[in-house]
Image (cartoon, rainbow, N blue to C red; front, side):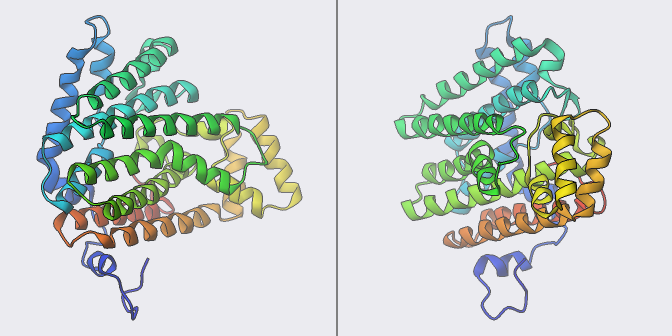
Length: 354
């Protein structure tokens, strides 16, 4: 966090200092609630685009109770550059559908049973239906993107979708790989998670008529904020509770995914403990989390992960300096503060997932 008494405080930092330190999600989204309601309505309307026999899956997937973080980014960027319009709503719907498709596939790969406090689509209808319907969501999103008068939108969505899927493949390739480095980890994060945050920010800027410099800065913001978000989500999987998160936890290590806290653990542990870590991951069982949790605590890995996360949040705030002062920019800064607060709370009291 940037210090309040620093001699050189950037405009975003000064603006951040005026925010409620415990900035709530409700405070951030209140100015854009009409936009998010329009996104929800448009998502519900998409159910009719699917075959009648498939529509129950679409209704279940598209009417979940998520926070719509990516649509919120679209709206806040639009407000920072002017006012959101119908094209921004359509873009937000497209990006949310791509995101939902990735969640459907993730839940199959992770064998997760709970998502957003209810059974996953795979748990309800089986893996085969879930995989195929996830594909349908991707296709429908690209179909909507093709409806824009400029091919630039469809190209951006297709490119981002390819990047996200490629990131998931890279992560899968490195399951149980103890040669997996922090550099590779952050590459995967940028591809599989941060790319959609970057698309939300940059595409909203494009639809608002922003110039190349502003769009590049918005992309930097999305990458940095999205990376911080995924680090947080990875920490929740290790240190959170399912009741607070509203989804299945502990799936990363069960599938051999080495996230930041585990990578820090491997870097800091002595030879004997590294051998224990490797043995636990390679032979993961239902009772393996308890000894792993002791090792994670022994080497203070949550604190180390949070420190790195905060550095990404600083980068995200700095990227916003190119935007004019506005309620929209304040909202974007509020998102970084909200994530910082949730992260800090994770070490003490279980925090709800974004």
